[in-house]
Image (cartoon, rainbow, N blue to C red; front, side, top):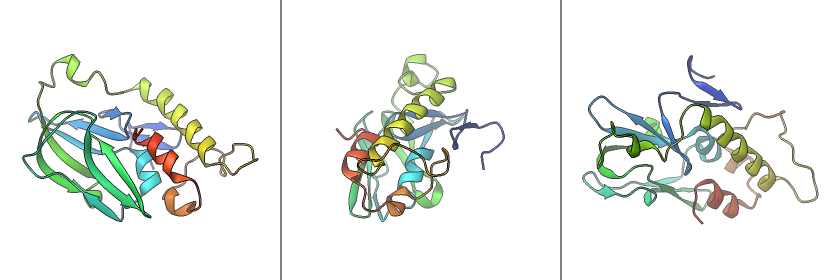
Length: 177
């Protein structure tokens, strides 16, 4: 159920106070100049609770678009890209619904710092394309593309469709080309 004020985009809950990276993460700026980073709703629907998570160490520097952390689900390794560059201040995990707190290298008040991230109306168009791609990649051979319940993505998709060809789906979803 979406929180009031959130962008309920195609059955997925995307908060308007967050920025979204195409590699399936969100960034929430805090008043102290740090940002919290977590998996977006589409990634959460695919992976649900990972079997294993390898997070960076506190104090480690990460670069934008490089691997921020790794996860495993049903034997599939997923590399999650960093949405922003900076120093890891704190680590969370799936049980906290966020993964990293980062002190960005660049000032968040500068427009260029977050301009590569999506926000507001941009999110709906991007997400619509991502769901179309996902639907085409997961359909059974020789069947038309269709979402079983009319358009709402089911949770824990990796477990729900274990025989799907997940490698290209995860590579495209998490920008692991």
